[in-house]
Every structure is written in C-alpha cells, then in structure tokens.
Length: 348
Image (cartoon, rainbow, N blue to C red; front, top):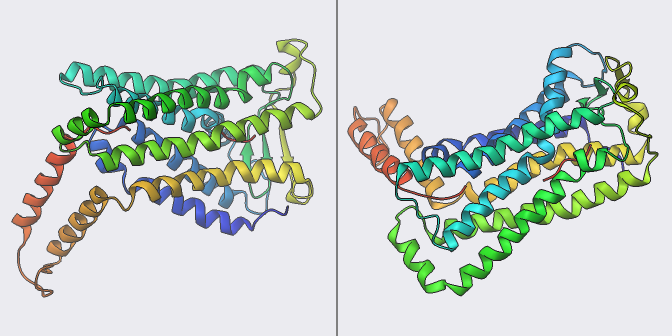
C-alpha cells in the first residue's frame, strides 16, 4: 500500500476541520456536551494534522520543538478522546431511554455536564499522563506527517496505552445495547417523552445512536487489530524508569523515502491521520443536513443578506429586514436552549 499524496490529505483534513466547526455553535448553545466534545476533539485533530502536513511537507527539520511537544501530547489524548466522547453520548442516550435524563433543575444539568467533561476531557488528559511512562524519547518527526509520540512497544505499553480505546469502546457498546433494548421495550413511553420536549425529537435521538454505533464499530475492531499487530512486533523489555527514559531528549527524524518503503509504518501513520477527517465527515453526514442545521443555514443566509441590504423574499436590495432577522434568531435560540440532546482509536 502506497501512501496517498500529502497534498490530498492537507485538503481533506482542512475540510474535516471546517465540517466540525460549522455545527459547533448551535450544539454548544443547546448544551450538547458529548457532541460538542466530539466535534472539538475531531476538529482539533484535523487542524493539528493539517498544520503538520504543511509544515513538514518534504522535510524533517525540528523547527518547532515546543509545538511538537504539545502536538504529540494531543495525539496521545486523541487515542481515547473520540471513544470517550462516544461513551458520553451513549450514557446520555441510555439515561433518556430509561427516563432518567429528563433534567428538571439547573443543578442536575450541571452535574450531567460535569460528568461528561470528566469523561470526555479527563480521560484523555489521564491518558496523556500515563503514556509518558512508556515513552522512550521526546518525539519522532516523519517527513510529510510531522511529529509523532514515541511510545516504546513493551508489555506495560498495552495496559497503559494500546488497550484504552478498546476498553472504552466495550463500555460504550454495553450502554448502546441497553439503550436499544430500552428503546424498543418502552416504545410508547419513549414517544411521549419525545413529544413533551420540543428539542428532544426521535430523529435526533436516532441519529445520535447511529453515530455512536458507527464509532463503536470502528473503535473495537480497529483497536483490537492494533493490539494484535503491535504484539507481533519486536518488544523491548521493561527494566526500569531510568532505562526507558535514558537519553529522553533525543528526536528521531525519519525521511519519507524510509517510512514510505515500510508497509506497516505506512498503514499505521496513514490510518491514524485519515481516521480524523473520516470521523469529521461521518459526524457532518449525520448532523450537517438535519432540520436544525438547515434552519441555522437559512438564518446565516438571511442575516448576511440583510447586512448587504438584500431582500430574501423579493430577490432585490432593500433597506431593512433586520427586525425579521433578530426575531428569527431569537426563535431559533429559544429552541436550542430548550432542547436536550446528547451529545476511534488512533493508530500509533
């Protein structure tokens, strides 16, 4: 398998970042914590690899050491970030299906948001800290790809790094199965809950369920393959902290003529970075064309048209539909605030 052109990835990663940014605002207004974190982590990953593909295009120069340190930490967090966000979504869907997620008081809503943040941000931060135990040196730089964390393949690396996405994916799968069971078991009551909340409709619920299921079906098989694949490679022996981190400050620079000639490295690097735009496209496919998205697109169009004095009703320039735009914005903002929706593993 040959690596796709670097310029092709640059274009798709930027598109992926934009697709995550477009629906972020109205999901944030509606306090959809899980989906917001999903978009934030996926968009951040796309933006990070977009920058890397440009800065290290056809070179391996260590031109930004501090940036590389930050970028590799984010990469480690991405190992579990998207599965963790999917777990947040599945937890919330299960609570809705069991009539436990109909939040009444602001305090209950705050507790739900805090729990989601601890999962969607806390777990990736914990992964960043734990992975350092099995990091052999500062980072690697691959031509066209950019910096990459330097996890040493040894027995402690599997429980401390490689197994986390699969474990989170399995927990998400359990929640998903229980949600589907409750969804069909309590169908009539579920429809009543949907009808009692203007923002909690069945279509949005099912799209969230489908998104989380697709993520699970990607996380568990791919994460299991990574574990099996890495276990077959040469495995260093853990001796001590000092041995693993001896000469830690070195940076390994790998030109493309070397890593692109190794099939296993090509598969690993390309799968990791292309998985980020794929997640962005999948999310936008589920939510970028929904009713609430089209309403916001129309709102933006109407707002821009009014600013340049263009009447969307007559197709001519006029002096003022500003009052209509404000009324429309307030109406959509109210629907967002009263809605309650919920809100992959990386190869190394």
